Picture (cartoon, rainbow, N blue to C red):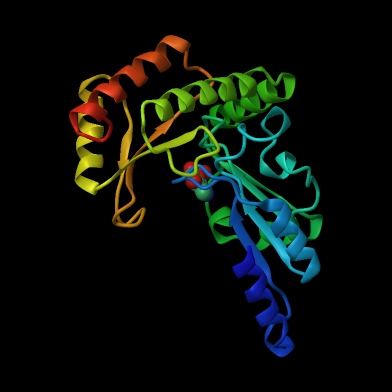
Length: 242
Ligand SMILES: *Cc1c(COP(=O)(O)O)cnc(C)c1O
């Protein structure tokens, strides 16, 4: 945030070069599972008269009341200029949305080439997206279950001695640091019945390889215990934990 503030000051000091500034951020970061400090970003945006854009692909259905996303999590409803999300993650379908002003909407509908020149989704996909949305609107049950599962799983994995990095969400990296170890751990887990993909350079820095585990609302306590047991077994085998 300090770096952002420094940059905004620098750019605003050269008014002829900076009419409009757009601050773009992810809501939930997909590799570490940490959350953007959107409250601070919006404050800075107001202070320096900037436009804000949040990509909440991993926050929808996860953060906020009824999974409304990061904007709602920070109680900033209506205060982010472009609130974009996808239905291909938490919603389990396809497609996405941009929530913005009517003027910006008009502009996007006329200027977004990928939107203009692509066929629409099939009715089945649209119906499934609407059904996901209705489930979330009707009750907070799935979101609560997701967080209950997440807290349980994270606590147990940390107790085993694994490093889960900066994660604050259901995206839970398990650090192996070395790329080969991440690949091997993923392979071994798959043999044991657990699906967790390795994340290696260039998706993350060379010494920050990991496997990425993801918790969902449909996991039962038995599913989680099964996964934890296998992660412990393979972690010991590969010398990641003692
Ligand atoms: C997955 C993802 C998207 C786009 O998702 P689609 O599957 O193309 O709808 C956009 N932004 C981020 C950060 C994502 O993780």
